[in-house]
Amino acid sequence: MLIRIITFYCFCDDFLKAIEHRDDHQAMMSTAEVMTVAFVAAEWFGGCFEYARRFLLGYALGETHKQLNPTQEYIVDSIPVPVCDNIRISRSRLYRGAAYRGKIASKRRYFYGLRIHLVVSATGQPVEFELAPGAVADITGFRSFDLDLPAGATVYADKAYTDYLWEDLLKEITDIDLTALRKSNATRVMDGCIRFICQHTRKRIETTFSQIAARFGRFIRAVTARCFELKCFLFVWSYAI
Image (cartoon, rainbow, N blue to C red; front, side, top):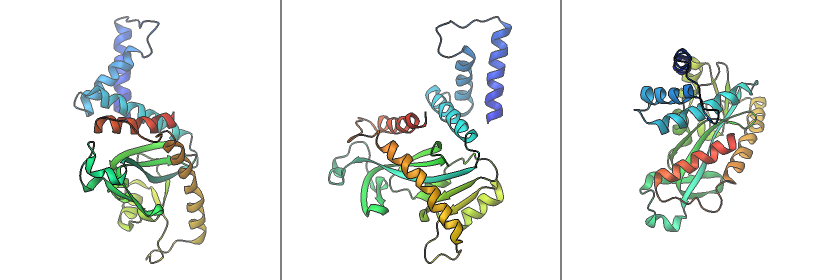
């Protein structure tokens, strides 16, 4: 995909030079960049410029943070984004149904809304993220990632991401190590040194989540589900930038 996007840009840039096009000095984006967004929209997003623009912004930030992460260590986790208090679930107009009722295991309480599933670098910078209904399990959300990470990368996770088959597939197909903390009854025992490294490294994502959650305020005001989801994306992007 990256090669094709670069090809689009180079084609547009060469074409504009050939016809001696000159951008206005006040332009914030070059004409070649605008044309590239249009090509990306036509190629992968059914002609939707908004989806293409959001994709390219997130893709560019993710690639930058990967380049600034020489250790090739990453962390995955999720953060709940409540739409309303539990007592108001029956009156919620943004979402309806049990799919949006999730559980916060660490606090032993439920919430109603979405989850941001996030992969960050060892320094806490977002690399990939997805939005999913609150009831979607962490490991299920993790499987939806493209995981466009360098070969040999290690992804640290908590016990909720334990899936031996998925670990084996990732290692075999992409050469990415998923290192999830083990439960007490796990059949694959984790070495004590690896456990310490995993626990220590994972603390970085907790700081990231607290800084993202600080942007939520007491309430996220939205009149449609699309507006609510857009604000969730913007919270992550603003932190990433």
